[in-house]
Length: 445
Image 1 (tube, rainbow, N blue to C red):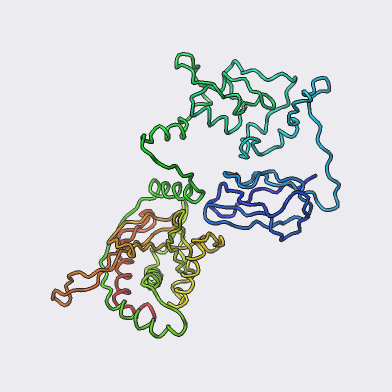
Image 2 (cartoon, rainbow, N blue to C red):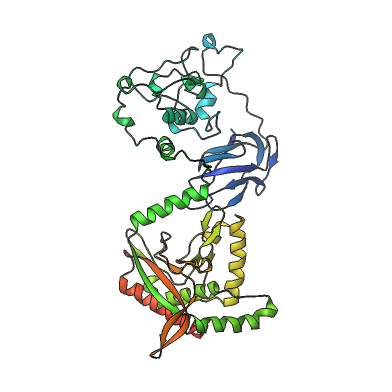
């Protein structure tokens, strides 16, 4: 029996991926640890290693296929020493064999297949349960309105055109409706369309609805990447499910900027140059240890309190934001934070991060000061309990010792999960952060 190699879950949020590139071909012998494919997840492009040994008998999913579901079979491997399996015979009776000049896929293969022959997309569960036809004639449309077997591409075309699949005769294997069956078909008039059965009552087809909203203006449509789809889903869930509370403080930066200058002078020989963001990471991490009630995660039955501060830092990439993690930032030196942050940011933009480098984190930091943004409210990165949004430092009138002076001031806003963190605790954290930034030697002690 061939070994089925399935699409792996390479990150906790991964539900589907893109099989970007095969690194093996049919007939190759692979051993445990050999690289088999490059897979694009919602966060990065990763190399997929072989666990089993054997000979590649079939590449089930074509290179470049999008939307391959986690758990779908992507490759068949014959274990070493096994003779190649004999081709499966059609489940059709001898007297009802298919027409030779137009052979169809054997029914047994259709039952076990996981990929659509037209698009390379995974076949839905209902199609894997299809039985072999009793005769060679194409199956007729069921008169009782039951769900018809159709390829994913055919379903999308039918949804876009408003075509009722129950009225279509399928010419594909087992009477399956394919793209060719819909050519020239038009949407039925409303009076002629039978109401869908209760089991089929669902939301209107999203693609047709979205297209109808696009104005007749010259434009370019770009396909959503896996990362962008995940960002959209997770942030929507965060705003819908997490009750946010926002707390803002103004922070005087003059002493912090002076300390940064002095530290950079001493670190120049080590080729280390601290950024303001590096000091923000350190200040937030230390503040979380001083106010542990904010270094938490909410779960339905428990409140998780962390013993160290791992800071997820928002990094902009061409495809969207990703948050590499500075682990143990509360105990790390500023030079270590700076060196690690530069490396993680560079590899994040190249989609080369390892899963452990962007998973986890006890809180997040988002800095838009380099864009001149004065103040903003960030969306919590679930399941974390808070995120700090940092704005630009700018010269402002500021009261110092009852006298009006000019100071470099920055606005910082904390977004807190109100299920886990009370307003007073969030306020205490923001005050601790402000104190550490205004008296920065405290974060080094």
